[in-house]
Amino acid sequence: MHRILTAAVLLVATIVTIDAAPVRLVDEKPASVQRIRPDTLLVDFGRVAFGNLRITPPAGAAGRVTVHFGEASADGRVNRKPPGSVRYHRVEATLEAGKPLVIAPPADKRNTNTSGKSHPPAILTPATWGVVTPFRWVEIEGWTGPDSPTGFIRQAGYAATWQDDAADFRSSDPLLDRIWDLCRHSIKATTFAGVYVDGDRERIPYEADAYLNQLSHYATDPDKQMARDTFDHLMKHGTWPTEWAPHLVFMAHADWLHTGDAAWLGPRFDSLKSKLLSERAGPDGLITSADKHIKREDIVDWPPGERDGYVFTPLNTVVNAFHLRALRLMEDMATGLGRTAEAAGFREREARVRTVFQQRFFDPAKGLYRDGATTEHTSLHANLFPLAFGLVPDADRQKIAAWLVGRGMRCSVYPAQYLMDALFENERGEDALRLMMAPGDRSWRHMVESGTTLTWEAWDQKYKPNQDWNHAWGAAPANLLPTYVLGARPLSPAWKRTLIRPHPGGLSQASGKIPTAAGPLMVSWKRGATFQLDIGLPPGVLAKVELPATGTSGAVTLNGKSISARRVGSRWIVDQDISGKATLEVR
Image: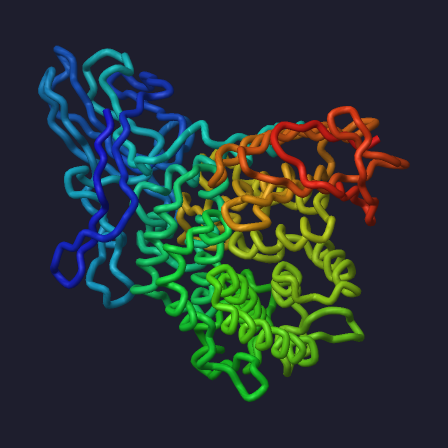
């Protein structure tokens, strides 16, 4: 049973329907039902989702029951004292034989706060749903009926447009596949609100969270409306961190690159200029930080303990890296919209400020970027963002990439997206995958092996004791693996020209399906004595192909015939664009 509705939000005591992607409740059967005590059932739905429970008691199953909802388990039971913001609820209910009953906890003040005083208003789910909460397990005490799963249904909220078969990823490493599955389901499960929210603690959109969510949503499902509605909401209800504002430029550019929709972008372009931090620019164009920015708003990473000792100064390297990246993306969008004079202005400004950026923040003796203009401290963050954003001169990129690898995952799950981008972009794919799957508690391997079925807000409870266990900004591999391991990403708006540039790392094979504006794109590759790539491009899409060089390889073939290609470093660059279905091989 599906019910399609639109999310609503309460603003100053008035119910207002916001522009939100349609959402629906989906009936889900349990993965298993166990009788763990004579009067108690444990119902397991296999994965966490946001929803509530519908019970249809059979004859003889009337009376009072106690229902325990949980995201976490302990010793084969629902964990009734979970840490931090991990969800647990206890609800009393009275059953009547044959009469369906929806059971849900009371509304939580933390994620239904619509006053708009301490932070923007929470996003409310449709009132007709009743209360929804994230849970996987349900214990039912006082149950006198049978163990059959037919009477227990989770009513789970998802985007109404979600397509389970829109994307896929499989590789020679089962752990990597489990990481992708975890991250993909995390994106699906967190579509329940109709806009991207920051997990369950507050249920409000934040700009950085939304951008990372958008990237992974685009890689796992064709829908673009939820990202657009989240963007429009955030333009009205912006949040406080400095670097969050430029993320709205990132969101608009991602929409432009994936859709090519000038009709959507055009009316919003001018409003994006307010997200460039220009009001804080000094005489040399660098963004300055006053005391209030240094003490609170310049965020660098979150929580604060994840900043690798970052030293905050009036000229902040990370803040300026975001400013420069936003200028570059504004130039690209202005060009696409035919606003050539503005594009030239953004281009000139970016080039001028980038020169000053290099002069003020780069330490030539270390070959690294300092945290700010008046400190000698060099953190992971001061280097990963310039490298990810293409600000590092070619001669210094490999040294910084190697330094980042040596530092390891000294950041939270938020900039881990950018750290992975930086490593993959600089031919450190094997290192990036190693960090993803590293033992210890700072990797996606740790999440998978913990037993969670949704990604976390932090690497571990000890790094953020109040963390949510249902946070989409922790799901970066959902976009990283198709973008880099399969190697597919748009080079021009709407994927009309696409780059296929696989990063095998230590894998022997990988395959997958990627949703694009033109239709599904298929990639499969195998690495052995040769490297073979099979691609299936949607109609009207051309691909630039760059293949890994293998050993003493000396040629590339297309469908069994030699083709013109140039070896540049560790890559074979195919000279002609490819269309349709094709098999390329490096020999």
